[in-house]
Image (cartoon, rainbow over all chains, first blue to last red; front, side, top):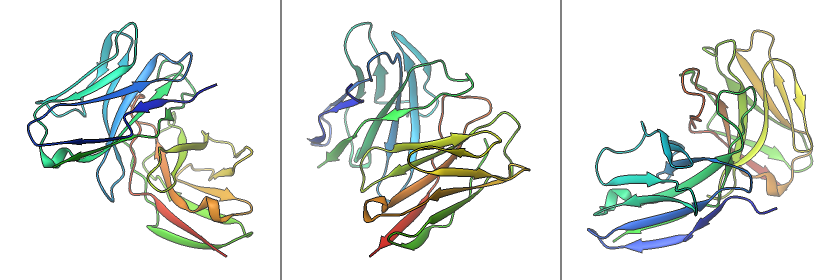
Length: 117
Length: 111
């Protein structure tokens, strides 16, 4: 009964390169959330996706960042032309039910630590 | 969105109960209180959640005041492995999908 999987666990990129972060939700979960955590800060919501749909991307920067959750395969968070300020831990969470139901718990993966040189 | 206020840090002796307070004075009637913890930059770990009644599971107990303006997470017998940042979260009332993580409480369990 595997939990949320994220890879890679550590990613190093030079400024201007692209970063692709992957998230496989728990079995049976069809809702995925991405969060970013800067050093010494709490997690900040970025985007919420269901299969093939972006439901809420209000926390996502307008440029360079995109996310998808295809019908088959993991969810991908993509950062184009990375800058040093993108260095952070990126966490993915999944949940089994529609948010807004009486009890909806998000389960988090181990995160991807992105370092931009 | 409802905000939470937590002390930045607390100490607890190993084997003793750890009581972590949280204020959420603007919480609305249908919002749940969730607790997560983050051990040494790992992914946040779900602990417990509740609406009005006190809740208990194998990890902790959650005590919510009658007016729901504050709550306390209780770890009955803290161990060194409980050293972590503990986050008290109130679900966003307009967008249930988001969890707002504040700064949390750094709990230091000492031998």
